[in-house]
Length: 492
Image 1 (cartoon, helix red, strand yellow):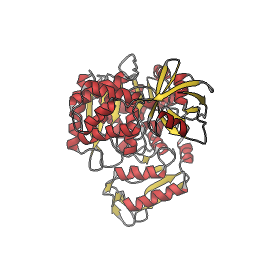
Image 2 (cartoon, rainbow, N blue to C red; image 1 turned 120 degrees about the horizontal axis):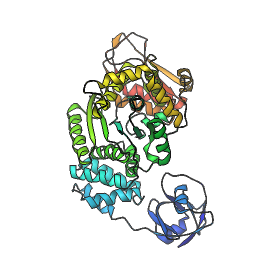
Image 3 (cartoon, one colour; image 1 turned 90 degrees about the vertical axis):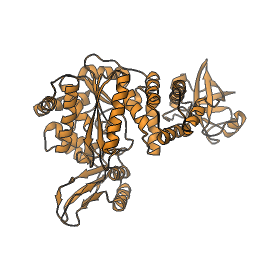
């Protein structure tokens, strides 16, 4: 069926087409199902939506993603037909039934995810099946290979290093500090980060508060050539693109299946050409994993890394409470700048960043064993790390604000949580803190989140501030306060 393209100018993040209801009935397609859109031999799979108000029966509206992919102009005619159900849905059903997937089956699922041949519901079934039934080491290895092969790859000269955390710990924004220290030491560290999945903010969300994080592959190369590093969102680069689509669904489901966690991390590291990688695995009562599970993950990461010739080491770190004081993009940036400027920095965040940077130095033999932390601290104390941080941010079309400027940009609606008696902080629940920060508006509202005035083991007096909630919205603040009163994330 030929239809005339009408421009409505909308971005959907994926190929979306809108049809008139009568047109959909003629094609025998329903909302959320797939159609093929063709022009001059180029064909694209799209998910459909319906509207009688916006379109006539002979018209089709398409998202900007389709316009770009097919080089469409308003008024062009395109051929539209019903798309067959992908074979990969059979393989997803196989995983739901707890059967092992073969290499070609995993490759087909990943390829169809990248090509938008699977709906969000079908991807959600795959994520849920992997979460419920797991994957063998061979399946995970094949998943990594498929995720890498369906995306672009970067190559850089020199010692390419990287650092990653499995996440789940509130604040814990060590990455920008580690990158600045390592890049200042002459190492190449092209960091592609995700947005928040289970935490209040991801590294990309945080850096986006003061600089751009979306760049083309060529732009990334220029930034890294100039500064030795970058801190960008991986979702815009086409590196392991299936991972970014899986993460979108995982965020909706609040799931982070272990096999996909392993595949996500390793596929991204391989795609950016990393040679030496440190993985931070925080463990503890309120972390994603306990120590036993952390050790299991460590063994899995290191075993899989060998299959892909990655020099990788996992570090198990205590994650019983937030690391740093700020939870939310601008609040975390403030902590980062304080560490880098040597200005009343959160010592737990500073010490952990130095530990991880030191491990990188030793892993790539920049220093002898035992000398990494000293080198990292020397670079930090010299001011070279802060200078490198500013250089990276400026290369990413941003600027490093002063602490005063940052505080002016924080959410204007605030509420202090006060101690009701003289006591000692016994526990701070990471998961509850992240949820409260999310409800306050983080990470979308960059100035929203939580600032911790006290950590576990510290004494508080009656009426003293324990934490402050920030929000850009009075309604969001009220919701965050109501949730705080229900969850009680801090135990005294």
